[in-house]
Length: 434
Image (tube, rainbow, N blue to C red; front, side):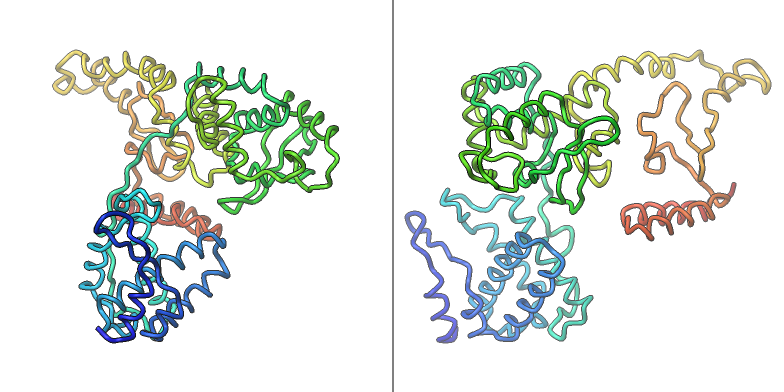
């Protein structure tokens, strides 16, 4: 190891986090450039470029991950002069490093699988983009694959039960006016806490014979209108009348703008008074969606309220084992049982018999705009607008023009997930005769 690398390594060690457990800190760019100027230059050029299209927080996260990877390379593989010298050996060694590295949150624990997935996913995107953008110091081959990323957990959203939600709202009613307004706004609108804190003073608008809340562009780069409950409107009027500041925010506290930490503290205080334990702001978003779907609101309406770009984001709430699932099961269970208890012998019944007519009607295909739905008549479709993703959907070459038009329309609107779906359906349709 060169003297320069040793100096960088010595300058990059923090205090020990436990007995015999030194923890390496992320290198600074000047330290990295002193050992490998080509590698540092490639990474900084990439960061400057993504700063033009990504949010600052995303750029900061990528910056830290790239500095950690560069620091690992110049320490453990000083012969690597640039990104073009990196190969699978280095990637696999870095994966092992991540598996043993301690978290920086001072818990003394190693990184979680989710954190490892984020780090490797960020590096994979970096490798792919510098290759696509023809950087002179690009990798010579694909270095990170899907199999390198730990399989993520897919837990259900953590929401409040109806009794706990009722306790929280009663406790909010006994709190001071601002804390009550904060809790009820989150609970009745499903806003993300960041969106909530950024609501401007003129966010309440009147249109279509009712009041709405205009939610600013946020996490998913879209804005939207959310119906405003009449009780919230009254509380907002009282709050506005009591203010003496000129801050351009819908809600303020003690003459200050709200931030996520203030909101979290308010919610914890109200939840403690309600006797329901710790509650964080995003739980109220999950609770709102769960309550809505359990009382019959459509997925499309919930997606619009929550600001989801695709129904895939909203479908997670349909997995929650609550009254909706039980009621849906009860509605179809008799019909499903009928499929398993039909009189035998239908297959051998003569053509034209009543049994054959019943069987034909039962499995009659339903014509769609670009194919057929083969779902049995007893099973109602709950998905409506996502037939093409349904396991019962079938199509053939007669629908190729329609599918091509749908794919081109999706491509024109930059709906890449729909483009992939229709390309897959076109591949299937071209091999099937009508």
